[in-house]
Image 1: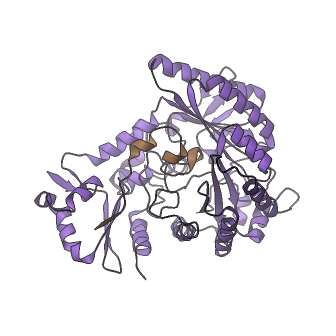
Image 2 (image 1 turned 30 degrees about the vertical axis):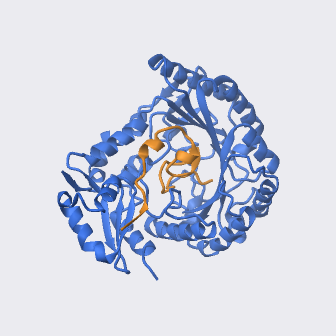
Image 3 (image 1 turned 120 degrees about the horizontal axis):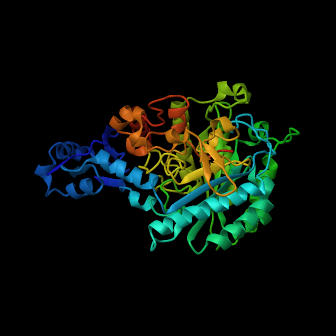
Length: 455
Length: 42
């Protein structure tokens, strides 16, 4: 016995085609007008159509499900399996809580103006050791642990020599017991080909740099303390990296482009320029995101506030860019990628929404959200030199499963739940929003209408 | 009827931090989702 999934969306687009989309599986199907009625009947009364050629594809892709399946329970199980993973350790390190740039919209909550001390690095090393010991005590024959070391800031490459030294220690100490993954988010100013090669040599092979639009716009916001723009240096560094690339080098290099109402029109030209430099090399990819209005302890955001898109309009523009990027870089939009228009299901909204991830600031403060770094009043604890974390009372609200939160009721009924799993924890906690949505059922319907319409 | 995107196997996302198996294809530094909403943007 079968039934229709609760998470189906069905939209008839301008061509008469029906687009089926399921948020729990991420599957998308396009039904020609001549099969529309049949498919609708199949979804309403599936048991009568078990021999039909469409039955198995609809079942395999989750549009139809067995009667006894509890989809919400399945979603919860996937989330909690990831949330409570014991075989994963993820540490975001802020080696420098200072930056050579002065971006007005920077979401860092406050600036500390210091670099990480050796004592804090030592504490983190011992924390990882403790976690590994605990895991193998519980699972003596357990597989290798996934250890992720992320470098963030401030500008992490201000401390690049320390980063390289610490990665050597991580490799030496933990490569027997862990699979080591490492990534870095940098403004790219110091990312010459030589530094890039050193990062790869130290297993830091997932990278991101950010643009704020075309040259003129980028230089207005991403400038040095003396007011000098950074665009030419960033482009020169990327060209230097590409010119010295080894085809066998494995890495993923993201160009994130932030956009606002006053900058987005020229961003298509920037995408063209980046494509001219890196071509269709799949190791590079471009994606665009609106600047978000995160509250900080500084007031610099206020100067930009009129140019920040609403969540809804930002998402629409983001999808427009995605479409353009996919065509430009010859990538098929239905592949699983960050540029998907229709969201794919997830096991967590945010990389920090689990028990195994922490962010450690330069002064050993521990955070659970990268937009709150730099202020102990919003931290969740302190990393001690012996590797233990002295947690504060507020850790409970950050490290509790979404499914155990009191203010999740509306989300549990939402058909977008598999794609967002409650969305941003910061907005839920700090802004007391019980439904901090990025996607809505309405925005999904509009996205289907827009991207599956035929000219 | 054409299936233009197959169902995603979430179990893939539960193994490792390999960017190739991440649903977001963004590697370790970002959310395991397609929104990128809380991607680190500095």
